[in-house]
Image (cartoon, rainbow, N blue to C red; front, top):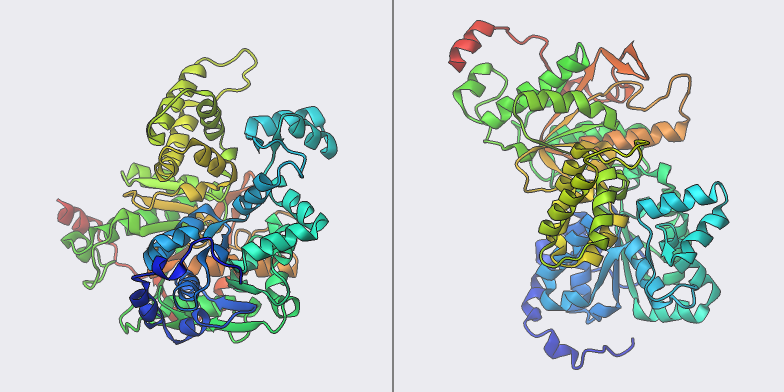
Length: 575
């Protein structure tokens, strides 16, 4: 190994001896095996709730603290900014100041680093930047269908788009073996989170950065591969042992998140399409009185929304007389807050009736999707204002000022109605951007680059005292004490367009999406389906998703079917 630029290394690690020796004591048996595995290719199959991030960070910390791997030789890659921040935070806690020398970032930020360091070779000026929404749209409008013309227009303005952040570094490395070796020497230990989600370009970048016998540690779960529509290919995960010499495999099966009934339902649901041989999720929490999975058959979408509101009301009431008397909550419940509750759905269009019903009940909500932040009209307008405005101080205040300027500018529509940003879009953008602005402090360039590459869900505020509404794709990687999975109907799960029949692979991915939804729940899980729903402009009869058919009926508590109806009694108790 090359000498570390930090000399001498030992004094820098002073005080870490105690940290190092106790590191593995905090892990279970299989986590310890993964964290302490020797060098070389390593694939960790980590089911939901099995401590994936914990294992990954402890492996990095163990290598640095116990095996004297230089932190600056470590590169940890994630898919979302939120995951990168969590990884960084945990490494700071395990290693202290030494963790700052570990490179942690998303694939896009890694590509940006390589491009910045080799801008001239790539034909870019040193001060190139990522095109914002308006700039991309203008270039596409001018270029039409001509991709080469679109790229030329961006380059003329010293701009790159998101795809360039990955394709250009790959082109640079392909063309220059010395450059490849330079980066291999810099990052001799590479760690990739959510490896099941890599696409062809990301895969090629990893193959260029890591030799076949290199110290590549990939962690993930093929049964949570849900992004094929973005080009992700779970096949790269499944062929890891063919790509990398003498690769080791470790499986994590012990689940620390969910109750036994939830895990049993999830494992049964994924079984017909599981990509993990002998799929298991063993509950670490053995509570014989854990509630069954609640199942509600709603007459309509409105009835389903009312069910969510009633149940949220009772759950947040905790041990109040009202909740106990209603018969819906047992006396073992602990008090919950709105932030403990999530409502998940397949498509963003399903959110509206739930949002409306919760709003009528004065229940606060925060809603996020997996769409790009930059694609929200209010977000793009505020970003443009921030880029061109003079300003200093904290970003949250600057975001509010920029939003006010945008609102003032677009208060009156233009003659042709174009370019208008509605006030509600500006307000929604401020809600989305404020948590992100807080995390970026005063660094405007960092904030703008995160806007360019981040998803809406990256701006989720876990401290918000509100019920969280998420698409199933956006919910991946999150967990909540209480989860409602609504719209569990054939046609939504699996998603099917009128007149089309999804192929086997598409249905398998939809089943994996269902599995992801079920495994977000820690203590209470409710699944619901409506008998009628408006889809594609017409109200249609619906039947429950076939994904429910493979789950043992004994794992469900059917809600609402035999519930005594005592409206007068309830009203008196409320009074």
